[in-house]
Structures are given as structure tokens and as C-alpha cells.
Amino acid sequence: MRLIILDDADVVAEWAARFVLQRVTQFAPGPGRHFVLGLPTGGTPLGMYRKLIQFHREGKISFKHVTTFNMDEYVGLPRDHPESYHYYMWNEFFRHVDIEPANAHVLDGNAPDLVAECQRFEDLIQQAGGVHLFIGGIGPDGHIAFNEPGSSLVSRTRVKTLAYDTLEANKRFFGNDISKVPRQALTVGVGTVMDAKEVMILITGVHKSLALAKAVEEGVNHMWTVSAFQQHAQTLFVCDEAATLELRVKTVKYFKALSEEHQKMIEGKPVDEQRVIH
Ligand code: PGA
Image 1 (cartoon, rainbow, N blue to C red):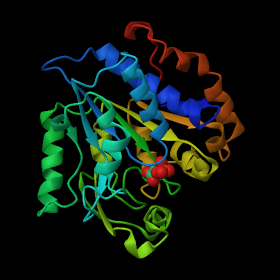
Image 2 (cartoon, protein in one colour; image 1 turned 90 degrees about the vertical axis):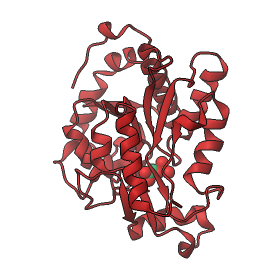
Image 3 (cartoon, rainbow, N blue to C red; image 1 turned 120 degrees about the vertical axis):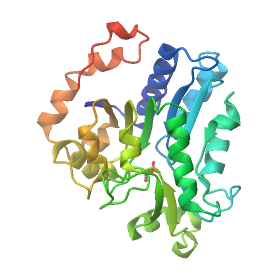
């Protein structure tokens, strides 16, 4: 695992976007050779999407041969509802870049058979050859995607009933009316994300600091589902200073001492010059 500690949320956004740029560039996608990205929604990745759009406008990155899979979607919210993740992805990212809409996969929370929809999504990921880089955010309770506390750490894409805390946290997007927050969502499982070759988890803000400490300093525990990534061979946690407040000083010092190594990961060095630290 790498823990990359940066000054603030803006630097996290820039770092994450540069990392995506490097990975896509190194892969050199083309016809019949797609880079496969897993993508999150929420407030945390917005800055990263804006940077990626900027890189696209500057001609540094194309998404023509990139396939994406989003982590989750509410059940029963119309696709064009401003809080649906379809709407978010289209407005915040897809419409600003050259991705082929057919290659941008978001779970359909209005599918007549939700179980079949989840299986279809898993099958599509398989057909795409698996995810090269899955990007995620986490909740203050340590959830990744909608894998709430107590979710199976080997779970696959499925229908989930949302925890009360999540409804509370998300009501701000629904006029502060908890009754308007959808009670269910479709979400990739922890196991689905674990199957990705590489995982990058973005964590900013003091309200996520306990979750970060649980994720990296304590054992793997299904009550903090993000802790499962301790058992992934290639996980990066990218966080800001505020998110480190519950970590031990020793942990912070140890990972900060590696910051020169971390910087090389976004500097466009050929892959074989990059030392891989697990
Ligand atoms: P946020 O959500 O990025 O809006 O904080 C993350 C999450 O709940 O997974």
C-alpha cells in the first residue's frame, strides 16, 4: 500500500488527475486496446474530473479508447434527475471529453430486473478484460461505493439498502428532506473493486480522518469496508493533511518520508524507472 499525503484537497485533485494521465499514457490505448477505468461520484473526485477535462482540452489525454465503469447508482431516480449518478457523470465529466457514450457504463437503477442489471454489469467488466485502475472515495463510516458497514468484503455488484447514516449524509442533496433520498442503490461490491489491477482511493477532510485511520492502521474489518484494500496488491490512498488527523505521528512521518518516490509516479517516467513499493 502507498499512502500519499498532500497539502489540501486541490493538490489531491491535481495529483489524482496526473496519476490517471500517467497510467493512460503508459498504457497507450488504441483500437481494440482499451484502458479500463472504474470511477466514483461524490464531492471528492470533482476536482480530479475538472483537471482531467483540462488535460483533455490541452491535448494531453484522450478517452476515445477508454472504457469506464461507475461504482454505483441510486434505485428509482430518473436518469435525468440532478442527483442521479448518470446526470453527475455526464455533466461533470463525460460530456466534456471524447469518450464514446457506449463505453461509459453506469448501472441502471431503473432496470426492470435489478438483479439481472447487476449481473450484466459484472459481465461487462469481465468482457472488457477487468478494470486497470479503480478510483474510489470513501464515506466517514469507511464505506467504499455503497458498501456500507457490515457489507461482505467479497461482495459483488448488487442491490443495497442504504444505511441511515448514508441517507442522513446525502439528504443535503435532496433539499434536506431525508424522505426524498432513495432507500436503495445498485453498487459494485468490495470484491468487484478488489479485482481491479490497481486501486486509488481519494480521502479529503477531517470528517474522513477516523475512516482513514481505520483503513490503514487497524485490521481488515467489514465494519470499515475500505480496510479490505489492505489485502490488495496495488492500492494507493491519496489524502490531504486534514484527513491524517487521526493517524499516528509515526504513520504520517513514515509515508511523508516516501514523498519523493510518490512524486515520480506522476512525472511521466517510463514504468520501468518507477520503483513499486507495496
Ligand atoms: P464524498 O462521498 O466524496 O461526497 O464525500 C464519498 C462517499 O460517500 O463515498
